[in-house]
Image (cartoon, rainbow, N blue to C red; front, top):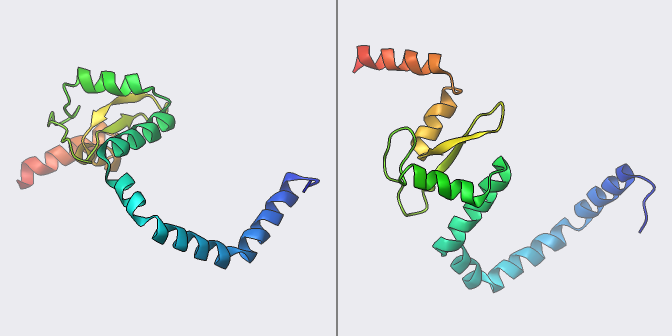
Length: 137
């Protein structure tokens, strides 16, 4: 089916998806029920999870898998902030990056990555938080 414009094609597809939603949902549910064992095994495979994680983050930050491995090796398998050893379970190292340039900085544990994100990478906010803790702890 040829369309005269991308806009018309998008509109047709939107209407098609709306018309066939119930059929597609029923088909998807039946397929997942039929293949539940295979899907569960895939989700639980630690090597597949690790690879999926790396692929996702490598694409997002434009880094190669060797960049990830090099950072992990350079940091001795430890967080770039708190120096805790990265666990072998599914709590993967997080790729810290500059939000302005997109440049990868280091691998962090989830807790340290959330800390920097909550502070908007601001040294000022982190200094204020440090001063607060000195007074109140």
